[in-house]
Image (cartoon, rainbow, N blue to C red):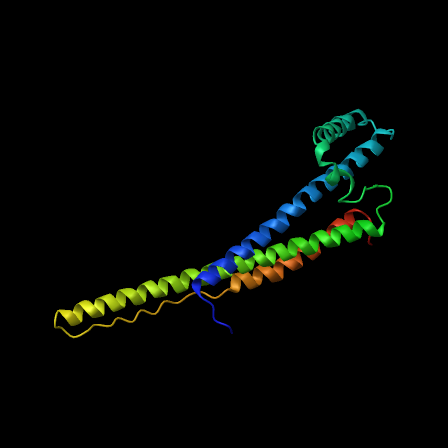
Length: 191
């Protein structure tokens, strides 16, 4: 394994954090606007139904239209990024493409955040060990200058392994798969 300095490790750790949050922040507008577009279509088609709650559907639809008018400067997100959803025909490949893209990007963001956490823990541990070594060296120097024999204290510090991080990755992916399956079942896309 290639050894790096603390400064390089801190830079790499910050890079992981920036990449993780950049992916999340880039996906956030697309997910929000895609969800709002989907619900606007959903409420629009519910208005045309003969449901007794038809009038109640006007409230969220008017709110979404209000948001659309107030955020007209973000028309790129409203029109281009997520596909225009149609609740009547959700079996279009483009929807699955975007969903798959979101899931992959969110997973990559989670991986970079986990790398940031692991590297930060390692950096802190190395810095603590360096500080302890400096204390030992100072204690040894003071004992030798006073004429008494040097005293060297060995302190073994046990660190827990990254078992939680491994569980996080395994069950995070498994939970995402189960959640996706439930959503697809609720939407009636699979049996």
